[in-house]
Amino acid sequence: MTDSPFLERLAIIMGQTTYREPVGSYGVSVHHIPSGNCLVLTLNGARMGDDDIGPELAISRVVGREDRKEAVITWLMKALKRFNPILVAKCRKNLRMACEIAYLSFISETEIPENADITPDERVLLDTGYYLLESALWETVGRAERNENRV
Image 1 (cartoon, rainbow, N blue to C red):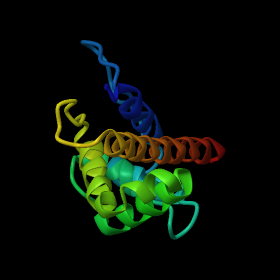
Image 2 (cartoon, one colour):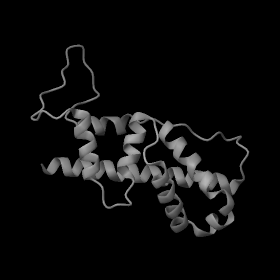
Image 3 (cartoon, helix red, strand yellow):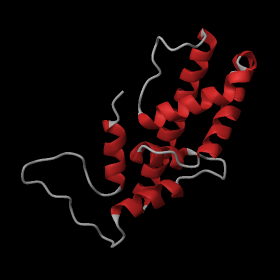
Image 4 (cartoon, rainbow, N blue to C red):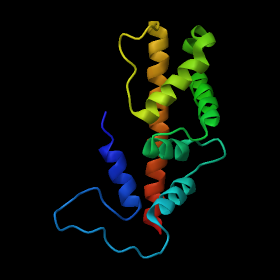
């Protein structure tokens, strides 16, 4: 998986671009807040409520480290239970571990190996967890872009 559209969209939010030319420039910012801080503020401004973990996912993906891991794991467990309660019931004893693996795989942008020692149901659970995290990330980026365009 490539994340160049993700990074490009975040760069646009910061008033920059990832496109490079030999004689390119970054452009002129209309404010004096560092662009990284603007990005964090914009992502947090896109938060839909206390249980929205989208901004944490975006920050985690950018820096490659965990951010509010317990909140993300709890959110993912609840989301999986709503999304596929039958599968969650089958994999109940490994649910938390599957959520942690999906989250760590998500932030490090690595895929779970096909030959991993997991059952087919656990594979579906991991893939579904990854998909739910990815969806939450893109929803947050979209909201941040729309909020930024209103200013």
